[in-house]
Length: 286
Length: 279
Image 1 (cartoon, rainbow over the protein chains, first blue to last red):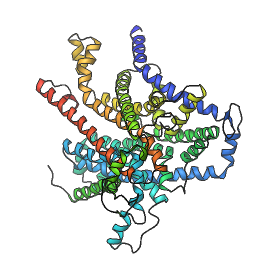
Image 2 (image 1 turned 90 degrees about the vertical axis):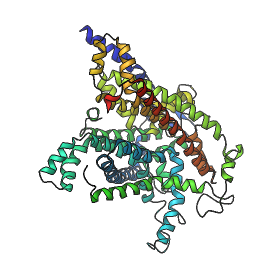
Image 3 (image 1 turned 60 degrees about the vertical axis):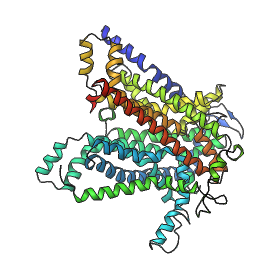
Image 4 (image 1 turned 45 degrees about the vertical axis):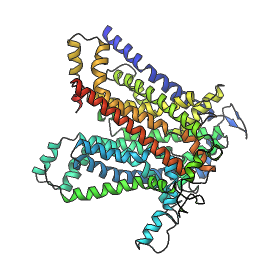
């Protein structure tokens, strides 16, 4: 009994800094947003109150639904591509690169581009994809197209491309991590039993990699759903997601309305994550 | 060793394409930062020059870029050190079940998945409504921790899941106090992963802008300065800045690697087998 109490005490003591940070900078801010979402706003100030007009306006506006559908569309498209690319890359690194040194080298190669500011990297897609950009001139010189394609930039294509570009690594790492823990003798056993390469991939490796896929999915989906900058830059302000709705309100100092949208976004994200977490026990799979 | 199959070469090709895709923007920035004096943000190149790099050092062209750079570095180190200490303590604590650990775990997951702009908005509102001033070293610092700590903790969970407890038991059997066990056995073994946590902490903080957007106050960090520049600076000076920051990051990473190599060498010389149990 005494030992148990001691354990609890030392445990709490050790996590107290963590709890303090999460309390002040996570729990309290969420409560603050929840409170402010019931306040009223004038053009230049916010007034404490308890009204539902922010939520009424949010759910009454057709824009909200378009924007939420857009957000899900980007999340699903980005997930599909990051999963396909991420799985293939992780598979290559885990099963075909045979020495640890080479795996480290490959990972370093993948991470170097991330040390350029995200914002600048995103902006540099513009000269890459634009009318006179590298992509168009390359395609023309290869004879694939006759004149520059317009939809490369400021379209859903460029938005998803930018998302895939920044977030694929978030898929690669957890999938690679689970793949490395697959017992290699299982694969040998499958081969001895006469399975083809594709069958091994589909019936052995894919199911065993599921936890990693789930963790990667959680990262990618939440990052895309919470984004507010990529969509603005890459769609040339022609398309919006929920994050942009919030940041627009913030720049107009409409904090109560921003808060209401933020609460709805948070609930949506938490529900999605709740569903995903049913498929994986994160702590066991790390 | 089995012979390489055809799928291997396909995958090498695929990986090469992936790298090309990752480096595309970085290369574009690299080329365009040498844009001639009359050139713009996009192709074609109008000559080749170092003009925009020199422009970067002139105060009026880019605002307080060097001040913000210094602040970002300082903040990055603050976040890095805090993340290491708090994650190690948290990781150690989570090895035993303590009451409330499940709730705390879900809180960590929430911190990880919550859209960054909510932290920014919430912390900003909280500070302004309670009459505190937002500042990068207080509210900005805390907001960034809500992003780096979950990462640090997840890495620590992964590390301790693979940790062989018999090392600790051996230390205890030989009469080591709990503190000695941690200081001389546990910490040296997990040290290599701590370099990873440090790297994560620093880079996540150094590049973070959504969580500091409303919490940094009047003194900007580098990503915020760049964010501001994207709306009002329309010259290749942006790309010059991008190239310089990439070079800087490469240097930081090289230093980290050298330190890691040195640590490994010293260890090998001392004949200690600490850390070997992980491999």
